[in-house]
Amino acid sequence: MINRPRETPYRDELLADGSVHRRYEDGREEWRRREGGTHVRWHDNQGASGTDEQLGGRIIKRRYSDGRVTYGRDIGYGRTVWDRGETLLVNKTSFGGRMGTLLGGLGLVALAVTAAQLPPEELTPEEEEELRQQQQQAAAQNSSGGGDAGGGGGDWDSSDGWNSDDDGGWSDDDFG
Image (cartoon, rainbow, N blue to C red; front, side, top):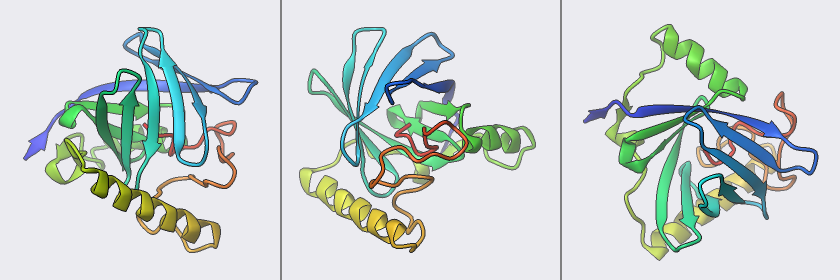
């Protein structure tokens, strides 16, 4: 199965207080702040708010303040799939996002999303905990110089919050 999701590009601006203002090209805006190692608290200009949690396997859990939960998957190059593959968020701020756009324009990165790249529709508490353990193991390997281990991705380093690369401290692996 191949799905052609609706692309929604966005740009992030690191604010003086360490939070991030995210502007989507469809007019939505989010204000985001990292809380703890794997959590980002956010609220938007449409009255929604919640928390994003980085799980293992490049899965992101989004819990809305009203209790709803949805999952996304970071598929690399600053791209994150949401809504059962219907939405593809594209980070135009990061090097990965710009590189993904360039490679896509050259036809080198598939514009479609395969079934293997789709986020899960739902996870049990046990499955979520297993993914959290994978994320912790990947973070421990990254901090000891062991590489990505397939779980964390990008510039994520749970020991210092935002890693500084070329994006003013906002990493490419910013919870889509």
